Image (cartoon, rainbow, N blue to C red; front, side):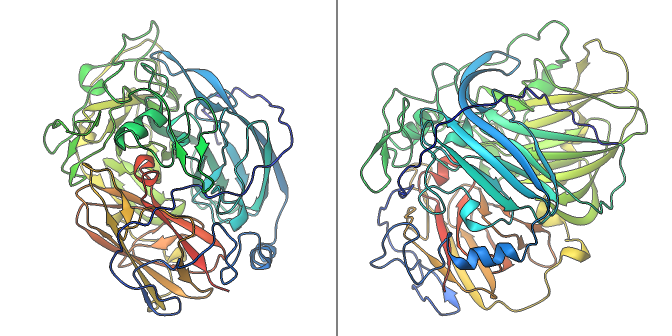
Length: 571
């Protein structure tokens, strides 16, 4: 029996019809040249092809997101039954347990309404925008048609205030995915929701299923907003953020300036436990990370965060709260089960700037999937998830009350949910020893046999060096800040190797849209991989989904400061 355990407050919204102009969504700045040469038809590419390029999807040598190649690929997916959904993005007040905050969300709840379909279904979702800014919706991890990918100025027009957009595509592959905007730093508000694609031939046997969405939270606390924080990190100048009160001021090329006061600083804190709530022990609410204490940062309002697991600096932003399914540890979500139940837990990191270490007190977890794809099952005490990563695990429930502990890695804070087999009175829950036990990352996993790529030498190698610094906050790829006219060319049918080289002192979770890649040496299939400082990883994928696809750091403050680019399929 599958059990939906998320809070659901359903609602509808009414939006007027209308469309914005197709505009670029980032700065067209011309940063310093990275290594390598633009070589449109060669094997090795080290710099993007953009000389004399018009903006967005109008370059005739590349497949357009709206071109016949995209339609032809979608027709091969044999669309199944239509599943209809409607979401309204709106400014609202949210109860996160410790306090109420003003933020933006889907259907006045966080996480937003779960979207659940079966592999092969056609997803038909209408997003109505009642926000004071334009927005879009990105389907993180799904291999969908390119014009539904939700990147403003590249794959679709921004959805203006009062307008709506109809997303429609075939959800071909089962797995754990999620949705969020791809407009500015809106992701670091309450605009995210789980997307579950069930397998009609599900091989796993389990009694219950829980979806766990973890997040770092600052919006609406002490006057802070993600836009203000980004502006502060960028020294008062943000090329990508919106105005606090509306659409933002464009310069005709998609750049935005921001207004507003200073962000950052330490706001909020641990509130007293509410009556009747689970009350974590001191260690559970403020668990520290291994690998040394926090250090002060010279960045404006940056978090004093340090983690050996992440290779040093753990994050740029101080968050007053960390949430599990929209709840702080003062009022956590409670999952109920019977002793002996076999439970599938789908874990999603929806954070903006935080890696999370996750463990279930008193239990070991068996990892079955990462980023939606099956792996050779592996037992572990704890998991480490970068932003955008997902893991599915199985646990066999013991009798008692246990914390599902979620540590903000390197930031000295934590949050939790609670597993109960009996009773209802609040209890003190110590920091589980499993947080400091065997810890598993994607590099230790192997892909299940049925999803391994056929061994093949790459037809094309694209080298992407991650550049920039915390001091200047000048994040980029190959020394070039994001320009929507950039293209790293690929051709349909190629085996492509992306060679990610982290030349910075900061870790980065790197995400590829519209595809999954394989980690080296039989590693798992993923769409997001964590790259530690001064490390390199080669990932391979098959170019079988035509269009224009983003590659970017999933730290939203890094991507919106320039660490993103585009792969373009040549005609």
